[in-house]
Image: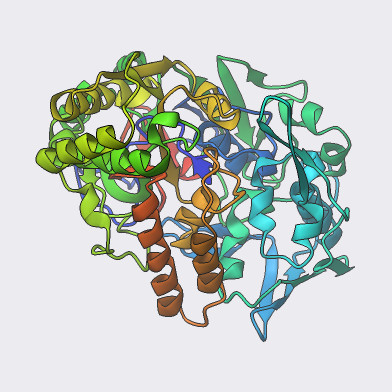
Length: 561
């Protein structure tokens, strides 16, 4: 997600959708589900170069996340419909939603033979949360008592006026986390959170072997995990900019046990050649389609495709450090940009109906979704209003249009086409020039965002880490959140998120989270674009393939002929 595990920040320009219920687009049977498939055959799958070494707590983008999720297993997993099921957890109990007792199944080991105990999880979580370890997903431990101490940072303003942040923890471990014995984890949260255990299937909570804590960078190049797969070679199976090869882990006996012999992720920077490879049976499965194939994939792969709505969305993020979009004039321009985008036409023409215009900052498949949040009228196409708002902004502070407005994006998966359409909307409705700032690797876009170096705007997206409305708000927009690359901050928004987490009922929590979205619609740190329906196609070598609730391909469930 991972996006950012997106949690993952979407690296798939065409992470073309997400999922809870199948809705057709072909039989999706792959020639008949009665076949059992070859349990020893390795499948090949579309991907791209991960941003970072493969550490679970440092991977929050889709391409790295899809590998990490195959190599590791946590206390819980999610079934295809998003329901949490226990994996390494024997039980997860609480009497007050603040103190939790987790029993870890005994006998589980990493593929290097090291035993997995309660202490393994405690050490791994403390490593992830400690600010000096610089793990992107440390924010996911925000609920634990003592997190503030281990995650503390120091901010200093330099001579150039820029603020520099450095780790400054006042403790090395979280006070609310301990291992009572080899099989018992005790967790105390800073406040009661009734749905906290729902998060435990996300990759930030995966266990790490001791070697990872000693040399994280080295480990990340050739990780040792405990999941349904393992690296194909002990000497390393990651050929940078080419592929990552995994084979089945015969010792894994959890709910994601592999039905094939392995997965080789082949890296592409353009979905066109990947689509051609799949047609020639030189690639087995892809969830990233070139834009022109969105109209033909059901006929190109008549019995080897599926389509389903998923928990993924897309936004156009507007950095707060861009002078054109600051202050009162900037607020008006943010609104103008949103009103100027013809989402419905782009969803129909560019994406052939595999997107639906967004109505909020979370997709409809997530429980608690609300279609009529006050302020979301800014997502409607209204060129006259867009032009008027832009003119109002000009009276306050003239727009610096000396250069075209850049929209940073990876170029795979149809991003170029929709960005060109949006740029055309801006030209026709606002009178400004805009263009794509292209990158072959999504990791390059993330690095630019992380370093606060965007010259203009950026495409962004979020693939659900766990099935919760909060997951589409907190990790992306909360102050200091792991995927809040543009550093948006609003204390009123943060307060509502905290109140939602502490709510005693799902409905009360959803009300708070949707109230928080009202603030986002006023500030518009990012402009929601569309929600996803994911097309998935596979080769003649595959009996069946499917994606899960959040659009991630269930690689372990793929049956190969």
